[in-house]
Image 1 (cartoon, rainbow, N blue to C red):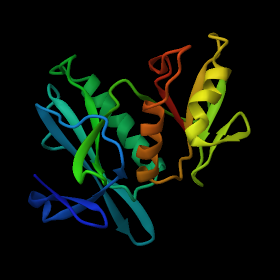
Image 2: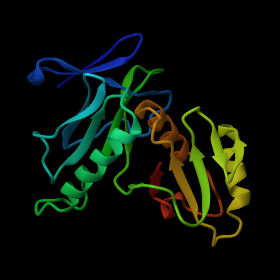
Image 3: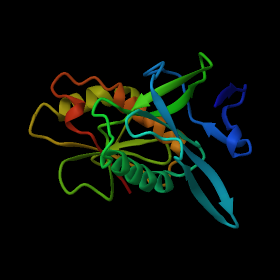
Image 4: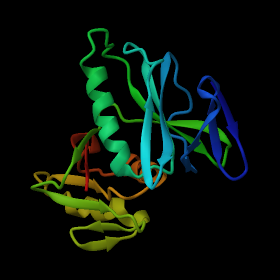
Length: 210
């Protein structure tokens, strides 16, 4: 497995698959710089006729290791999430699973020109809308809507801090199913970096996709 970084974008080349390409998402911040003892999962961008397909390759995955998900940034979230749900369930249900092993998304830090990783082991994906709680919706047009009000991303922490003063409030992070995986990774990094004194974001690990 080799990682190459171009000026325009990062490409991951899987030589055993005839040099298939994965265009990695890009972000300007590194959450995790290195992952040891890992197995690769690949989700390729494929076009058949007029249809876009998420093509999964997990033949080199070992359930007892950390899994790194290398996913093409061009894929829409509506195609990626069903595969994530299946793969998470497969690893969780394995008799060889390691409780300490985690799942990570790979992406490119386009400032440092290095690989970076985003943990999502505890994240649960649900296809559909939440039935209760405050909705924080990351829309396809790069806007964030909180209960019908557009909030600037740089102001989201302060806005949610006020919302969450009532600790019984449940915050639901929701995502536009038609946004690109590249956009999703950027939004997930925003969620990861939210700073809320009154509550732990680990209390709200579910991502609703619709």
